[in-house]
Each structure stands twice: as C-alpha cells, then as structure tokens.
Image (cartoon, rainbow, N blue to C red):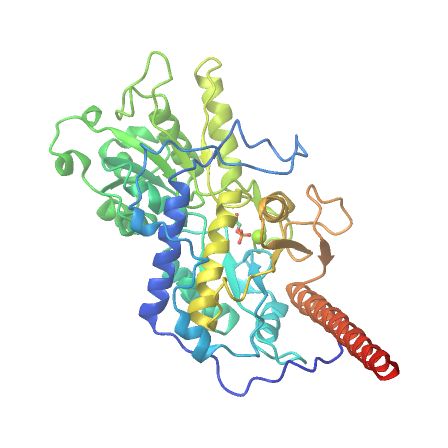
Length: 473
Ligand code: G3P
Ligand code: MG
C-alpha cells in the first residue's frame, strides 16, 4: 500500500463515550427505525421469492398501515441532521475515515461455531488504526443471529474479537421485533433460543405476556408426545391457567408468534406453531374450520443455512420457516400460510443499519452526516442470499450512500461456485475485505487530490497567461 500525505497516525487513544451515550445512541437509532418500520411490514413469504427459484434482486417491504403502529412526531427527526454540532467543531479528528465505513455480518465472517475466525482479530486492529495510513474506520455489526439481549451478544463478541463492542454499533435478527411490542399487547408465543433467554429478551422489548412452548407443554404434556421437560424447564415454565386466571387453555388467545432464535427442539416447536396457526383466532387447543384465522407468524430472519463449527453449512431458521409453511399446507388440505421475516436481506434492515451507523459516527467519532457525508459502506458477508442480496438491493435504493458488497470464503459461500447474488468483490477473509476497502478509498483520495492539483495548476497557468497579456498591452 502507498502512503497518503494528509493522513497521519493517531496521536491519542480513541474517544471514549459513556455507556449512557451508547444507550442513548442506540435508543435514538432504534426509534428512528421504529418510525421507519411503522410505515413498513416485513416481507411475507409470498413477497420474498425463494433465492433458489428466483434471481430477482431487490427484496422490498410493503407499506404497513399507519393505524397499526404509531410513532410520536418528535421521534421522526432524521439522523442525518446535525444533532451534536459541538462534537464536530471540538472533536473531529483527521485520523478518522470521514466518508466511508464498514458493516459486518458475524457468523461465517468474524466468528464460526462460537470461536473467532483468526483473521477477524487482525481485521479489527486494522480498522482501529493499525494500518499504514494510521486511519481509523467506523464500523457496525449486522447479524441475523440472536437469542440473547443485544448487550449480551456484544459482551460475547467483545471477548471473541478482543475489543469493546457496544450495543450502539450492533443489530441482531430480532432487534426490529421490539417495535411490535406496542402492537401486540396481549399474549404472544416466543419460540427459539436457550432456556428462558428469549422470553427475557421479549419482555425487555416490552411484550407484556410472553408464552413459550415450554409453558404449553407444562400445561398439557400430550402436546408434544416425545418431549419431556427437564426439572429446570418444568420449574422455569409458567403455569398458564393460574397466571391467566382461567380454567381452560382455550381461554388464552395468542395474538402473534415470534421465532426469535433457532429452535432447540424442532419437533415440539413445529407442532405448537402449527397448532396455533390452525386454531380458532389464536385460542390454544382449538381448531379452526377454515384454517384462515391463525395469528401472524414472524421469523427474525430467513436464512435456510448458516455457517457454524461443522465443515458443511447447518440448517437455520429459514429451514424451519419453510417446513412450517409446507406442512401447514399438507395438514390443512391445501391452505396457504404466509409468514413474515425480518433481518437480512430485507432492505429495511439495511436502512436501519445506515441510521445506526450515522448515529455511531456522530457519537463515537464526531462525524455529522450533513457535514461529513457517508459516501460508501463496505458490507462484508458470507451468505450471498442474505448478505450480498441485501447489500446490492440497498445500494440500488440508496440515494446518497453507496453500499459495496464484499463476499468472503470463510462461511456459507463455497469457493469455486457461482454465488446466487454477485458481490462487488470476492476475497478470502475479512482481513482481505478490510484491506481492500481501505486501499480502494486511499486510491480514490489520491485520484481526487491529483485532480485538485491539476486544477490548481491549470488556474495558476491561466493567471500567468493573463499577466503576460497585461504586460504586452
Ligand atoms: O442463526 C444465525 C445465522 O443464520 C446467521 O448469522 O451473522 O451470518 O447473519 P449471520
Ligand atoms: Mg453469516
């Protein structure tokens, strides 16, 4: 890599921001997403074609009726407006990359089977200034994974990557579901994850009555004939009749089903999701005559496979989603079930990421978009169907910021195959991705500088020519 005259090594440590600022940053960004989502619905199964069946490039999110969700006008302020101008005047640092940033997928890019991909640690160091330009580059994380609170996920990632990751720079698959807590204020079924973790996440999001498959099995062990709750599961599972003050399960109505994280017991979860999908208006233990009155079903993403410790990809939540839809048709004599999915590749997820990134640039680095526009976001992913598809769709939609897709070979994508969605560039590892982006930006800066120099030179020559003319007259 060559050198750049206007970029110097950082003279001091990174700006530190208090935990409350991070929380505030996240909260503001989230509220902006809430506003955004308040005008959009997640894509339904019928609207998002199967990647294997379609080469269509732009997943879209249809409009959500304004009556479903409301967001106070005061929360609508776009993040692109200067919110902390003093930071720019007092704190802006020349060593910060002011017009580009990175966003990272996690599984298959930074982590695999709970362990860091070795190059990931080095890549983070490069982003934090250990590069020959001494430039520090803002970055965020955007994963379809979940199953824990955002704070817990950040703690895990901090240990894995040997640096501090803040919730202000982190989005997981179920993050947008918190928006729906205002809409479904009664009982909801939350599926997936370890033990009680997803119930806790959902309650933290504001859902008021969170029921799990364990609660239903505890109330009626015949629900899942081959499933026996462990003692711990039995203790943690709630007594539904007592809690709801009713005598029969059919008095309890499930308003919506949320699959927060990967199922730990596909058979029982499938049975319970289908039971409720076929129920009379969400009433437990009932059967509809039409099979058309079940509650909505939301998945936090639709990845059919993902990259874990095994050498071959593993089945993910998207596979369960397909099974739910297919088996529903089988057991109802041909009825169609439409479910909804958040996460990548939905463009709304990438739009949320843009807002979070803008907020992060402002609070962490003093970069206000109105003065320091974000020209390019390098998105590094391993799954063409979600990471590359979503990045390219976002790029096509985005007016001001270019989203540049980088595919790595450390995860779902198999080297030597044709990716279902083409990235701008294919590299070996996340470290190569980071080096590629920084180098590309430095080349662009040098080209711009040369253009400016040439222009100045031209201006000078013109002035000299004018002086000569004046001398002769
Ligand atoms: O379950 C998580 C997986 O489907 C994808 O995670 O980080 O690759 O988006 P990620
Ligand atoms: Mg991945």
